Image 1 (cartoon, rainbow, N blue to C red):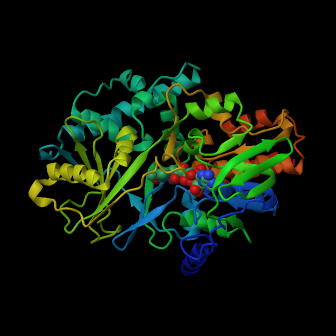
Image 2 (image 1 turned 45 degrees about the vertical axis):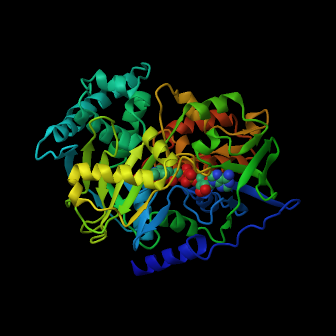
Image 3 (image 1 turned 90 degrees about the vertical axis):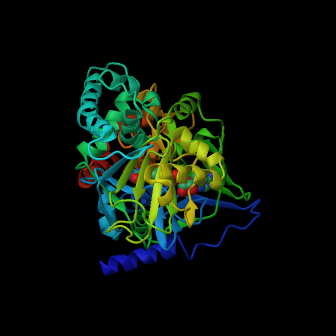
Length: 520
Ligand SMILES: Cc1cc2nc3c(=O)[nH]c(=O)nc-3n(C[C@H](O)[C@H](O)[C@H](O)COP(=O)(O)OP(=O)(O)OC[C@H]3O[C@@H](n4cnc5c(N)ncnc54)[C@H](O)[C@@H]3O)c2cc1C
């Protein structure tokens, strides 16, 4: 384990946290760089694509361009007190065949079992005691309603029936939340995972996402990353460190992507021009939706429709460090606000044995519109709401003001514009697949600009393992195209078909499939 930790530290030095490459010069006008493969974005997708292009396809002329000074993208941490905390991805979900779980073990990224059943239940009047209405509602949703609804969604999919909203699917399975406790139970089970409410979420998409990660390829549990050396981004850094002489251009903001049948030309904020034979755009769906980057020519209508229709959600973790620990040793506390569904409903402590004992750190999660609202409020306004809810839960006299208080503003950040995607009600499978289909010239065989990210994952959208699989899949398509000079037939059809069947949970199986598709 020691040598793994040392190699991970070396990866940190090489790819982030400290020892960054020097910032790009301010004026690069007239300067032109050329590469064979250009990867736009240094998150999990971009690094997984680079790793696969290097090791599986034998390509060497690869350049990653990244706006930040560190790899990892939405796997991003911060500091509170003397502790590294995760602003972005935090859990390795489902475990089982999740490749991130294997990578965390391989690179020595510290994680531990997260007990989602260790919960204290509160209302405006404080602790509700054992077996109160909130606990009862959570149990009913999780043990009766969701399993029945998920099976129903599965049947609907098999029979080719139209999708519904999750709200409608739940209603048809006997769930009609009226009380603050029922609404909070629903928020905890649905919004806290999808970051949007059931009324705008797909019934089939929600059930399928749960099934693929937690049932098909997982064992149903989650580990939470508590690594204090690299944070969760250690998995991305470890994967990047496996690529000898990886060429990363940090602090480089892409402003324009021009594509044609013969290649891709990218312009950066500092006026630099980068030319490539093939490029892979891994920017988040939020970035694509907000026109932060200009495409020349404009992306085709079918692609713009797909980008506009899929959902970029927001999930905001709000951290505080207190002078005293006034809460219990359960991992979670749920709060049922009497008026506003989901208002500071989910709380977690990091001050636990095996986590950061003695840290006195709590965090709450807001999603959807409440997360957006907090981004527009001042820190002081958010803190006032946060502390007020805690005082309702634990008694005013017991809750002091925090010593430190901080949270990320993901939705306002032009490099992300949200946190992860949710399959919205009314999004078709074709639209989801269209997000991944490459563009270039008139003909399919002239594809030069490819797209990948967690949002293009048919089965694991929203998750880090989705980003990983999508990076590898895009690499296999690009390598196939380069090695065979795009003469293998209908690229668009192939990308779509693989959208459905590539995402094998087992790494070895996936590798075999990829080899077969690329070289036989
Ligand atoms: C708050 C939060 C909680 C999450 N929780 C979990 C979890 O517990 N478990 C889990 O599995 N997943 C979780 N996720 C999802 C997971 O983090 C993402 O699915 C994954 O990191 C996405 O990787 P990506 O490479 O597709 O995109 P990104 O990580 O967004 O990578 C894209 C890269 O492009 C760069 N970029 C953007 N615009 C430009 C530009 N104009 N020029 C140059 N570079 C640019 C960005 O800086 C970024 O590095 C969470 C995400 C968030 C934010």
